[in-house]
Image (tube, one colour):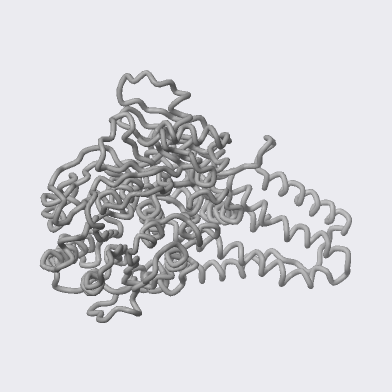
Length: 624
């Protein structure tokens, strides 16, 4: 009982501290009180779950004379593990909130798969956080020993039958407490949601619970096929068809239901395609898009090419950006298809589409390509050449995530010159990493925007510098004349805000540039999933493929311009006329931008179809 009360006190104190830290968001309309009430319910559920085992063991140990002595080290180890785990997750929570605006969740678990990269990142940029965590764990261990020695007794004066009754009563109460409710479904994070500000909802749980819940969801890994409610497959496809520009040609192949024929706008000799995927480069770092003056080189290039000024990312992770840009796949609540088992082979990518067209297909990355399962996914789906850090000819500067962006672009330049000597065209995905915490980059390259060198803003400025250096070389190279380049971000950095989906943090730069690309500013609403069909059209590659993204070389009616965004558990389908937000186990929230007459039911159905499409196609192996 003492341990139970101590743990509830620790969790409540931690939650209150986070509330005060985020006072600008938590003290509005008494949100803090709802957070504390909901949090106390979750904490009771968490501790009840964790106390079931020692109570059950205690009841069993009373059967034998030496049962309590045998039980003592087991219970001590279990309670100590609970205490240390709880303290650890609460201590790291502020750092995680600063990075993701959420408590530790599935992102925390996914990063654990890559200990080398994560340890390097932590040692480079989070030394103080590591020290605080270790100190907190040491103090917690000492507290655990003290409390246990004070409260444990090998012999008790209460008769065993009464003690057994007490233990079984507490055991049953813990079962009820773990369930958290007498309603049909047990307590879960959705029940604690009360605000459109996701952080307020997240503060209502504790970090041990949110991580354990994410692990459970990852094990189930059912994607979003039932996340926002069920919808018949034919209904999903009908909605997608009505939103398509090629509806008449859609769904003739039942094995690939979204397949249609796309005619390229360019009819000449096929061109090379290069995607320069920029790590964490949100629109807020680009002056041309209304952001900070941190990307002067990109600002210049935006006056020389086709600048898509109103384009949005589909998610908040690099693999989600890769998924959208390389495969044209719609976002889901599941992990990115880059990491899922059933998409490791025979899954559509533009590399797989271009390979039969005699294209050399390549991925260039300054780190270890196995990170986030990229290497496996790429090699299984059309990429024939992987050039990562171990294969670089020369590395002048190596940070936590690998070679600097300058070294990356130098290697890419050499690769392009070699590929250009062949008779065949090439496709290359180049993925940067310098603009990623802990923001390692070479000295004396840029004038610092912040006083501290290793800051997010300075890293963004260095990444832009490296990009500018690359294009100075590229424009003088032979491959420039027959190559289509796109500069696009994978996602913004540190996505956060009080909205269900913080739309401004999904706004990213996207610039298509090349010898024959006319300079223009394009303010049409667009998505990352539109990039691949557009590049194929510009490169002169026609054919059947399953992508539902728009070919932006064509006229896109205003009513069909849209963007899709997945943010934690929420999905947004945004058009010029309205925004439809989907949340688990809740009705759609619709915000209209004008007096359009489309019914709420129709808007909800359209958004739901796009939210469920990806999971339906993946689950049934229909995206190939």
